[in-house]
Length: 193
Image (cartoon, rainbow, N blue to C red):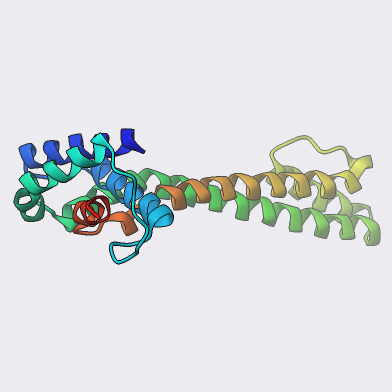
């Protein structure tokens, strides 16, 4: 934890020098605060954090930089940084969603074609198989029509799994909830008890 505390000291000094928060510095400070809250409780808790050189450095740096840290916090700018990071992931998520929907549609069409194959005449069978071949984009053999349903089911599951992975990456990258003023002060309050 001392390494994280020292990193936050460096971040505070960088913020004070540049006059603006970086998204990475805000996220690190928020994560450190959450870790400390999980272990030691909030500032009103009776649980005392063991004193270390890093905590002393942090408290001294915070007292020295407190006014500049408070004056340069800009939630809108940090939110813009988050939105820029999420833009590409949202596009990937949308493409994966469309691919999953297309795979589900292909699977439904394969099931309909299989029903036509079982119940209709030779011309309807050929027409249905030709339409399925065009939509599928891969070679389908006429004597193995039942396998198409299983193949398209597998394709649908793979597309759903890809969409779920991209969606989870999007959710994990959305750190909007970590943009809060006073995070450095809350850390200092816990460290100074």
